[in-house]
Image (cartoon, rainbow, N blue to C red; front, side, top):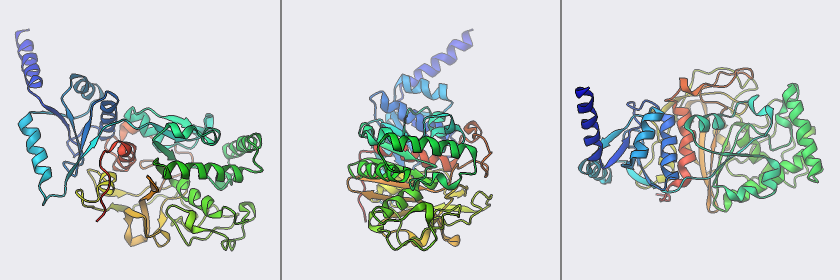
Amino acid sequence: MKKWWLIALVVITHASHANSILVPMDESQRDHLKAYGLAYYTLTQGQHVDWLLNYRGGSFLIPFHNGVLTECKVRGISYELISAAKTNGILSEIAKPDVNMNVVRLETAPRVAVYSPKNELINDETDAVILVLDYAEIPYTIMYDEEILKDELAKYDWLHLHHEDFTGQHGRFLRRESAMIQAKIQEETAARLGFASVTDMKLAVAKRIKGFTAGGGYLFAMCSGAETFDIALAAEGSGISFKDLSGDDDSGLDYSKTLAFENFTLEPAVSRKFSDINANGTDFFQPTASYFQLFEFSAKWDIVPSLLTQNHEHVIKEFSGQTSSFNSALIKPSAWVLGDNKRAGRTRYLYGELGRGHWTYYSGHDPEGTPGWRRGNTDLSMYPHSPGYRLILNNVLFPSAKKKKQKT
């Protein structure tokens, strides 16, 4: 009993002299994904978090608080209690002009929304962002077409689009029973809201989302959600009928309306692909043994791309999806390439600005998923260090950042 009290006294004494809690994000971290949830939780408690770009994998530095310390223990997150002298030493090291590091202060927890159907079909095609938000314990609101068209998006800071078809073709998978059910639901919704077709409704939704982004919102799109969003915007007013595409119906596309892609061509309606934006073949759920590489940016000058690429690994295993990767030749010069497979001509991760807002496109469906439609939900407790999922969570915290990009 005496020994137990002695150990407790040592722990309490150490904590009482701590100035900060350092949450390392290098290989020493027990659960990288839950560490993001801790940062989010800290922001909800009215405390700030300093994101140490390129310091030990993009670590978090948090002013000491017993509540945060308890959360580290409960969530199984690695942490270090450090003194004021140690804290100042770390910040001084990062401030040196010859090191590629920086400090970004996170101040307010972003209000997160996920664009997804709100019915039993949501579990049929797993949404990687919903999975990781749940695992990291970051709260979010699910909304779909009707909420977007009622301008409820204005209540939020960050929006995610995943496996969605903004052209109104229901993902071109009508052979699947779940897709047929979802198509019927969307057709009923479009009619009830006064649209002539699902295509018209999805275009209206895409334009609202684009307006949200231009007004200062943060848009994060994955897989076919990114590809079809640009296709829908480019096709506005073109007279193109997606149901009757023959493969040479591109003359009416207006690429000035898109966020990321230009000069792309549409695939015939009988194809499983939407366009040549998708750099993979028609068998796009085939496993791959390839890797893509994250770019390295100047943390002191190109702050936003540096923040979005924070990771303990810079070479990441590729993963599949309906839009597994983007055709590098079709990316607008204004977009930042954050990660690609240069040898294969495939881009995996893009960032850009629109008005006062920001957007990120990330290709693929599930960073740790098994290719194929009947793969089931990914158990993230088996992948707590996933570098592919870390990129998603970088984006979730992005709106909290105080500093803005200073482009070289």
